[in-house]
Length: 382
Image (cartoon, rainbow, N blue to C red; front, side, top):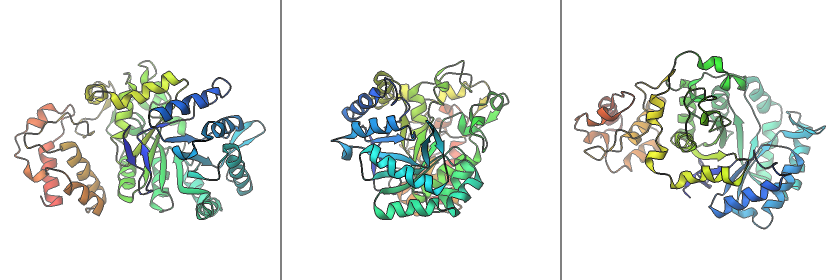
């Protein structure tokens, strides 16, 4: 299992994490089975968005005796009322719900306390000014949560929260179809077939800006909806009109700036292990570029997706990483210190490019790689 830094939190997290979608299966007996499987393969991160008391209690039981082996991302503002889930911004309900969750989970702290489901700008303003954010900061000060998170599907709202400096971890929906769509306060627009009926070209600029800002500010991204609820794995349901594999979806998400962990939901141990198998998959099995190029109504022409089809470079330049650092610097209008250090750590740099053009003959998207190397050498100085 590969472990990544979760932004600036100091936490090392497995790049495959455990989503909670299947915890309720088999009258919650699946919870322990999934945690056992996760522990066996070295997975140390899980998400718990549901407020269902039966599920929370099952997670608490599954963690008994091994709480320190797992990093818990659990949601604040997700409560259970009248036998069903409810998202609330009412402070009294939020406080009562969080304290109850600690009892149900049999723990006295949550590693990443995640403010649940904020997709509207006025909702973020409510969180900031209505006492929710102050309460979450109190929880962190008291040690009941270690880090502050937020979950969102809207890149404009998420960016506002990230730029506020209040958020250390962002849970965000990342996949190659959702990344093409403009921001919306209606999450259902992400899988609305009508939005994919017209030609779509390259990543939405708000989403690209969000990922790059998270990278610059040290906000770790935990990925939800990597498979689009399973739709991307089925050609008939996929908005792209072409089926992707689980490995391709995971690899795409893990290639985005600031992404630390992909939360893989599963309804059985066998299904979960299909995602875990990513760690042993070959480069060909992970490769998504040629499949992207076959999308009938989606074009990534001219846009680098960091797929590394351009490799190997005759001068041994890691073109995908150089291009990623170039994009991060261009997004800021300067070179952030962390980006400069990561660029410096590369074994070979853009200034070594001899403009042979072999890389461009391999690129499925017609990227002007030689121009990018020239720009990178100018920006970084070598």
